[in-house]
Amino acid sequence: MHITPKGRHDMKIGIIGAGNIGGNLTRRLTAVGHDVHVANSRGPQTLSALAQETGATAATAEDAVRGAQVVVVTVPLKAVPALPAGLLDTAADDVAVIDTGNYYPQQRDGKIAGIEDDGLTESRWTERQLGHQVVKAFNGTYAQDIIDKARPSGDPQRVALPIAGDDAAAKQAVTALLDEIGSDTVDAGGQDESWRQQPGTPVYGLAADAAAVRKALDAASPERTAEWRA
Image (cartoon, helix red, strand yellow):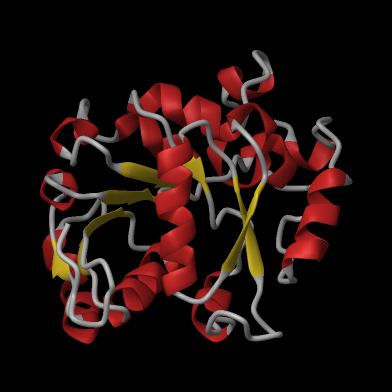
């Protein structure tokens, strides 16, 4: 891993999905000096404006992931099974995979049996599709906040984001990345606890400090309300 003169890790980061979250993560991660390769379902030629604006590389999903030390999967949940099989096989051995996804059964995704009938958390279901552990992050963040609410470390206005996952090293990498782009982190537990930050929970959409985020996580109920069921 190359460390730039400013002491920053200059990593290859692959972003799969160039919607609002994927686009703004591309903007922030390139701004702090990372080598960002971004892909969408429509092909690299449709990403030329974002690439030109940010200095990111427009890529296919396969090229975006190859050798990447961090991969962000930020596509609609229903589209996750359609990602290329073995997509993460060519990433760095210690790749940290960030899942920003949410299950919107009525609004977008239709019923996903593994989540509704089998009781998997959304990110656990995504892990099974990808064949790789993930860190759940950014799923309850408004895309514009990634730009507008970024603050340096120690700033009293800095917001904290919850993350969940079972891989301690990956969580550490994601925490460092969030710090670089202007957010604190609250460890929400393992993947089986990640329901605490799913849609409909107190922390979902919350832009607040670490203490408030922890309180919201603790107040969550595992029961899906009617709005978030098919």
